[in-house]
Amino acid sequence: MFEPFHYEFFVNGIVAAGLAGALTGLVGVYIVLRKMAYIGHGLSHAIFGGAVVSFVMSINFFVGASVWGVFSALLITVTARKRTIGADAAIGIVTTASFALGIAIISKYKTFTRSFDAALFGNVLGVSDGDVLALALVLSVTVCTIFVGYKLFLFTAFDSEVGRLYGVPTGWVDIMFSLILAATIVVSMQVLGVTLIAANVVIPPIIARMITNSFKRMLLLSTIVGSSCGIVGIYLSYYIDVSSGATIVLVGSTLFVLALMYNIIQARRHRIWSHFRKKPAITRIPFSSGKL
Image (cartoon, rainbow, N blue to C red; front, side):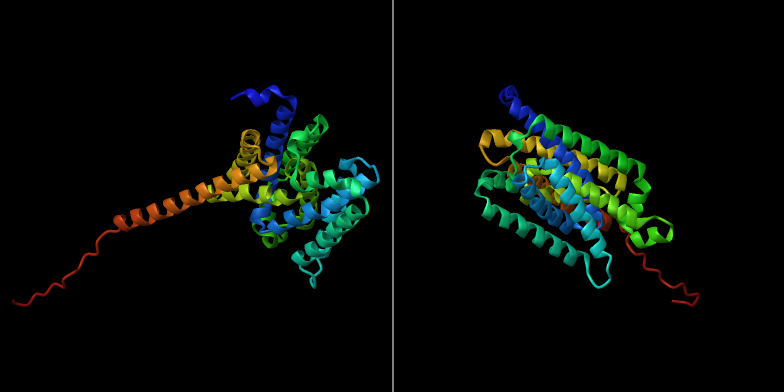
């Protein structure tokens, strides 16, 4: 049972998966409540272009991908503010252009093939101590940011228009969140890969949303679910010899199905209980003083 923990690469991998799962689960709450699931998918593909450019120019991955991710996030945010261009259109333009640039560079430089697979599908068992440190750093900064700006994120998540009326700087909150999301995707790419990050950003908060209506409890529960999926997914992938990133997402999907079934059962039980608690209607016979 404890055999995998004898290997240093597995210990690094399971710690990285737990941190990445907690980070994506925490950030995903805001995405789900704002109904912005597409931005996680879009930014992950946009940052892929930066990862390729970093590799070709022999720049540190975190530096190159982070700069590219911040630029893409700001570009999407600024473009989405234009009334004539929707957020989905802005994400589509930035995503396709950046991803196409990455593919074009790969087709030019054939030496990127192995790293290309790792970037797309993740390689959690190949993470280094630096990768784990980067995940821990981004998670710490994200937790502190959400803790300090809890009310601002709460207002913006549920109703940005009302928040703006109360003086909440929703524009700056969106920019700050975009930067946090970009950093999350950059440090999680090694664990989950481009194709699976979007799923891990969405599944844990949706599970939490089906269980609770409290924003605070949703943040905590989504973080725990995301971290648990990462740890259990890595552990299972070691024994069944399947891609680690895919196993993490499949574990999350299984939990989603269980949460959905629980939600359905609870709803039916509530309807049945409400039906039996209804008091029978009393038929009132009008009183008459006349003789029968």
